[in-house]
Image 1 (tube, helix red, strand yellow):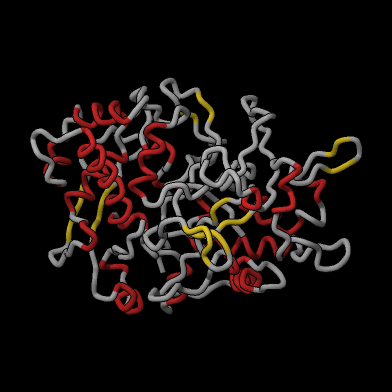
Image 2 (tube, rainbow, N blue to C red):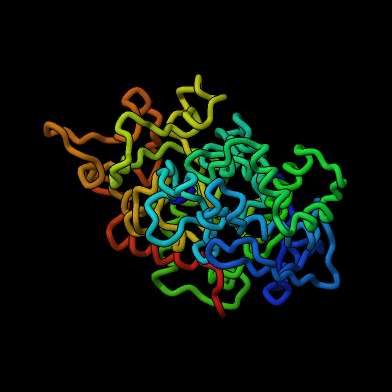
Length: 419
C-alpha cells in the first residue's frame, strides 16, 4: 500500500533515553548516540549542535564530525545555483524530512520557479535499504529515489544538486566551487582527511559522503519513538479504533497493507520498517492541479524518463518505490505525483479505486479514464491485488469506517510519542 516518496548502512543510531530493553537487543551492542539539532527552514548552514555519548563508536566510517558537517551541508542554501534552496527546503524536519506543509510539488531552479515532477519522499528509516536489485525474488527491490536509480545515499545526494528544477547547479565543478567557498569547508576537509591540494573529485566525494553520514548517523532519521513502538515495548496500548485499523492493515483479504509495508521486523531487527523496499504500479490518478503540468508528459517510474537503463522493460512502466509508512501522517501530499492531499484520501483510493473509479478518474464521452497517469499501452502493469478489486460485485473490500480505522492506526506511526 505505497502512500508516500527516495545505503547500504545496517547500523541504527538511537538516543539512549529512548532505548528500551528490546531496542538494546536490536542494536546488538553497537550504539552510536548522537543528538543533532537540525536547523529550521533553509538553515543557511549554521553550526550544528551535536552531542556524542562517551561510548561512541564509529561503524561504517561514521563520526560525530562527519555527521555534524553533513548536517550543515544538508541545510546549506549556498549549494544551490540561486543561493536560496537547500536539501532541507524540500525535506523538512518537522514533516518527517518530506515536503513542506501545503506544497503541491517542490519548486526549484535558480529563481525557484521551476516545477518539480515528484513529491519529496521522507528520508527516514532508510538505513536498512540497499542498492537496487532487479530480480529480487518477487520483483525489483532497493535503491534510492522513487525509481531506485541511486544505489546509496551518497549517489542520491548528487541528483538534487544538479537537477534543473531543484538546486540547479550546472555541473559538478559548480557544486565543488560552492563547497570550497563555504566558511566551514575546513571542517569537511578535516572530517574526510582531504589534502590541501584536494582535487574536485575528492571534494565532491567528501560532500556526498558527508550528506550520507548525516542521514545515516543523526538520530532524527531513525528514532523509533512512535506510539506503535511504545506499544511493542509495553509502554502504551492501542485504542479500540487503532487496534481495528492494525487488524485491517494486516488482513490479506482486506487492507493487505502489510504485504508491502511490512508490520513485522526484518531479519536481525526488533521493530518493523513498514516497507519492503519493493516497487508497484498503483495506477494513481494524474495530478492536474497545476497550470504547469504538461499533458504530453508521463512519469513511468522504473522505465523512465528519469531512469534510463530500464527503458526497454515495458513491464516495469508505472512502478514506483514502496515507501516507509513511519511518520506517514506528516508527509502529505501522497504518492509520487502528490495527487492526494490527505491521508484519508490516499487510503480511500485503495478502498475504492476499482469499485468507484469515477471518484478518482475523469470521465470522457461517458467512459471513465482509469489509470490516466500512464499511457494506455502500460496500464496492464497496474496491480490488482487486495485491497484493489471489489470484495463482492459492486462493493469495496474496505468500508468508509474501515478507512478511518486504518488512518487511525497509521497515526500511531508518528515519532515523538510520549508514553
